[in-house]
Length: 125
Image 1 (spheres, rainbow, N blue to C red):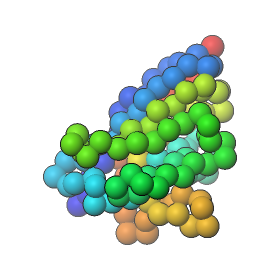
Image 2 (tube, rainbow, N blue to C red):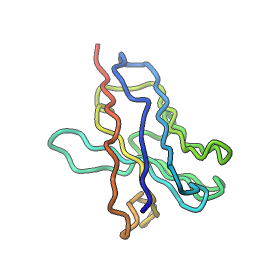
Image 3 (cartoon, rainbow, N blue to C red):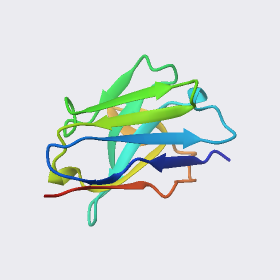
Image 4 (tube, rainbow, N blue to C red):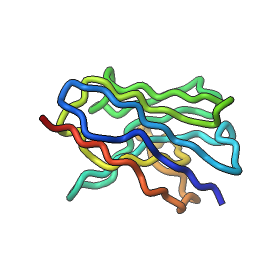
């Protein structure tokens, strides 16, 4: 089954940057549309960004538009999320998963259930 591993999180000051990575073993990520999701304590999981199989289409939640950039490197079988101008409200555990757009909202594909451990992003001074 498809398993994804997230990395790159950490503690950063407001206004700082981080780059998250989503890697897969034994599967080729280019076969899937991929999304980044995040969940903060006490809040529902939020779709943050989406990239299509070949990278030709991307989508961002309004809360991160203009600050986050999603990309993929097929040669490295990795999807990235570059996060700039980070805010305290970006603090959450970030996950990647196969995704689709539902009325321009990033949602996980229904068949996917093997969520990884995620990577913690903490934005604090």
